[in-house]
Image (cartoon, rainbow, N blue to C red; front, top):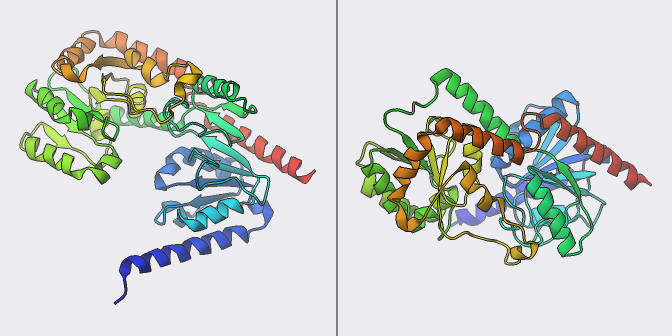
Length: 399
């Protein structure tokens, strides 16, 4: 009897190996600019750049993906050559033998684990942030040490990386003041949605989005049940949007929430985070240390209530930089902070914010302008910079 799991693994390996061979068989001129995607979600950070590169600048790009069902594999854009390379030994081998001028990726920890710099060619590695978060607290120590260029979303990221280089006596990387196209897209989506459906009314029942990070220190693990009860008791509409990793690894917790509150018409458990209508029509987000809070405040111009659960820190040496992570400093600027032992204060904070909503919106806009580079004007400059690096590096390789 055939073991279907083993057969599927073999088929995936064969497909990945075929993708690797096809990519390496390309002439050097067609491997000038290469993007690597861990999964299909990576495209949200690459899409605007790739569209500009291929359609406005008529550049050919290669796209390597570890997602077997990545839609880009069926792209009709003849300027995109896409290849499935899996996430196992084939990918590891390909990275070791990579031949390209520039490789763009959102995966950190280059050289730290199984993803290595090429031993076969002088590839220029460009890191593109997929979140507006601190570099020294949200990532492992050394996560960016082996990249040549980093496209930064915010001034604080440049400060943190430069300080890291000083503390650990690392050579200076090329840091580019880029921006955050994911936020730009969200702002545009909110404008279109609200033009068609109107702004959420501040009168009547308010919609509260609960959007925690994942893991044992997330608010949904520590006090999710109690928080939802408090909100429902105060007649709010409550939508819980758990992190995809919580959906994957702690379905029992979500089932408990659904059993307890599912009979209440004002409660909804929303596990598909692609659903955005309720997000755009909501009044407040409640989060913990998730970067989604900043995206929500900056795009929807609505407040965030932060439940002050213990902060997760992936870098035990973060304090060496003596820089406070932006996740800490920004919470009191774009929202309010509530102790998990004092959840009864959450409704009071929500109503207090809405008593002076216009001033709060002005503060969010001010912080957003200070925190994000090139808002609404990041695509073309980033593409020009990417092309400059690729061409310059290509000339240096030829010397």
